[in-house]
Image (cartoon, rainbow, N blue to C red; front, side):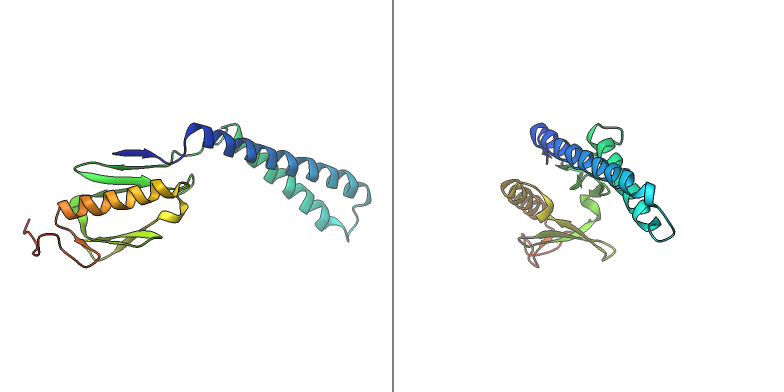
Length: 164
């Protein structure tokens, strides 16, 4: 199962909004610089720095919008060997082999993967843009974990652990 979390149409809309925000920041920063530079004295230097920061932030936004700094693909993937996901454009990618999992806990807001070394990895469902997709992913993880006789919300599917 592979789910692309942002369709191309949604991604293009997001990039357009980032571009417009960047253009607004650059324009505002340039106007502020033009206003502050002629009167920049010892007392107004902070305003010049603030205007320059606006320009830089706007340029960074525009760079993301026109793919100078490409956004990473957001997805969820699950197969017989592992599950992997990246939920936001700047988050890290998680690759979790089923053999490393000992339990799965699900709530409406997140899925918690308990690893064999007792550490936990949280997958926040609230950052997935479509609630139906988030619900589908949560149910698919639950069913796949039950098929592998992993503990799901404190319950085993077959009532006992299978030794591996």
